[in-house]
Length: 74
Image 1: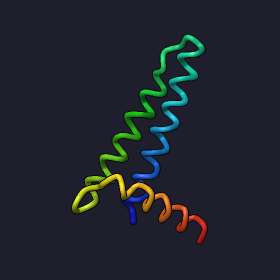
Image 2 (image 1 turned 90 degrees about the horizontal axis):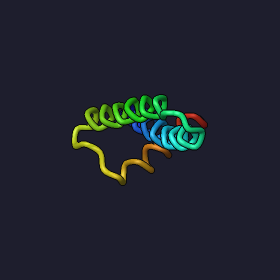
Image 3 (image 1 turned 120 degrees about the horizontal axis):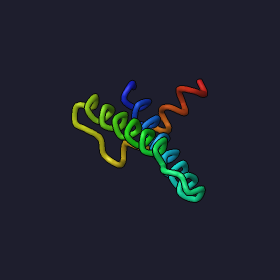
């Protein structure tokens, strides 16, 4: 489903934003790019939740990752 892809991309961008923020703070820079990634990732997760009729739960995250990985492999 389309919402699975948005959910996975949003989660991955959220994780990448955390690592970018840590790297920026360790270098003494402002984590501006990390905040941009976090906002985009949060928007993608929100849009994925909007696309699902009943919304999303935490149980949907592993299912979405499995569905996206399965779609890539096949």
